[in-house]
Image (cartoon, rainbow over all chains, first blue to last red; front, side, top):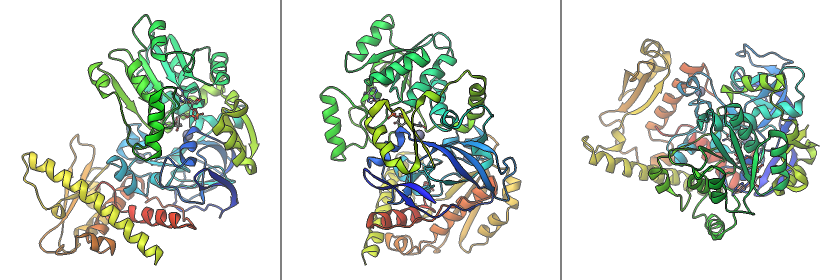
Length: 389
Length: 158
Ligand SMILES: NC(=O)c1ccc[n+]([C@@H]2O[C@H](COP(=O)([O-])OP(=O)(O)OC[C@H]3O[C@@H](n4cnc5c(N)ncnc54)[C@H](O)[C@@H]3O)[C@@H](O)[C@H]2O)c1
Ligand SMILES: [Zn+2]
Ligand SMILES: [Zn+2]
């Protein structure tokens, strides 16, 4: 089959790879109908996340049709149109039972790598390096879906592929940030990053009762999109001092909940950004945490900061003193999608959640490399490119 | 040759890392109430989300209990929801076989025990041990990564 492969740092190409097969009884094979680019892929493509191998298939946000099931699959059937959570998790370990699916004990066969990086290994992810299991990604004609009964969810008729596909990753990620960030009625919530993840976090915050939601980015088209589709306020961080602006808008208090949806390749304006770039280049720090720092500093006393953006290792000049002295709660996670996807699909079916506008570009799989070029450079208003095999 | 060098480098890397972790652990242990012990004699343990009776009746657990020189201990985990399986070599079962060289050669007797504990847990909890799709390494970096992935399977925080 054809698949979009990582061939080296900043090198992508469509290649012929072997068709996937059922390797475990609880696997299903899904024929991909649509598969989207995600900000997380950029960290892999740029070589910031180690443990990639030339030939690895990218992609983890996808929808497809079940074409084969292993003998251990009970709930799913051939022909089902399903959205598959980007996280591979067993559904029966202690973490899965507690709703912390991305921490699954049994979803990552390459246990040693995660343990070396983080002290303990985490669950698996599709198309996301050998440190998270080495599973082949979804920018392909077919994908193997392990623990299919737990990770694949039938999509109600009436939601088209290019809208439903985001229920796989961007939407549950955003929801998790708002929910586990502790958003409640009357809160003011600030979201760094107006990509699909940030926008979905902003929407979720509103659903959970936030009275004001403020989205921060520098890309005008994305800020405009958030304003138009979600009715949120925006801040262009290149035009103003974000901390001062947030203080002014919140009666001097600062936001109650700050959600960071930017990650390890944050851009910045001041000398701090140059410092981070150099240190990251020299591999003296693995991540550039500009937006995370800003969120911690801007957050109100006793508030909460949730890190949705992906970080892999060590950062520099992190304002730990602010965390301690302001009494902040800081959390983060790869998304626990299985916990939210059925509820989110329902909201999509009811029309309460619109996602179609995030698919600014739809392209055939064979133009995958070009799609990533657009997405990476944020050219032509690209928020997500959706690939069709 | 190239491949061998990489493979050795990689295993040594893992071993050094583990050694460093162990050094930290020992320092911590030294500060606590518990006397520092030879890391080779530590219990290797996993916690299984199943009742002690279920775990005790499992054929794989029984097999582990039959390994010569291996002590296996089952304990209900705090909170009453799961069971700890711990294993430790006693006597001279490990004699001279726990250094980095044994590790490179894959001859450290604890390696299969780690893997068995992990697999037993997965079988008991899910009914299977997840397999990875084969890769086709084609660059030195890729071969390195493939070897690292292979080696990392039975490792982890155990
Ligand atoms: N936790 C999870 O499970 C999960 C899931 C999906 C994505 N992610 C991560 O979430 C992050 C966002 O994903 P995405 O798909 O929306 O990516 P994206 O690249 O489309 O969006 C990132 C946005 O951040 C903006 N940005 C950069 N620096 C900034 C700064 N200093 N302040 C404010 N905004 C800034 C960029 O202009 C861009 O619009 C990535 O790090 C991605 O890896 C995490
Ligand atoms: Zn993603
Ligand atoms: Zn699990």
